[in-house]
Length: 79
Image 1: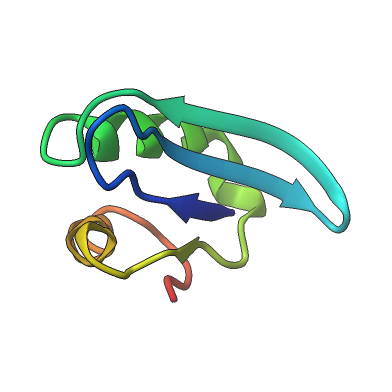
Image 2: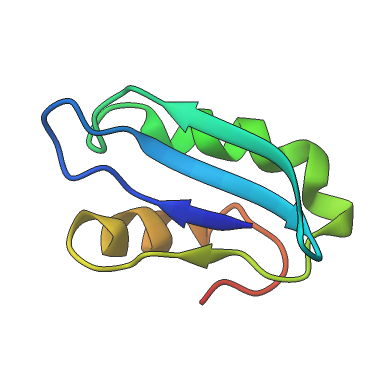
């Protein structure tokens, strides 16, 4: 799973779920990063928890807070 956190404005926070070269799902949140974007993304990827080996979050800028808060609720490895 890869997550790119929105920087604000009309940007969207997006998570891609993949297995090998195949994209299984794309979860999009239009909420601002300081709104409920984290909750929406985590709810969307929850169904893949048992299959997830790695969740990569772009932790530059606002993504750092998203990653830090997500570590409290996610299982597996966060980088």
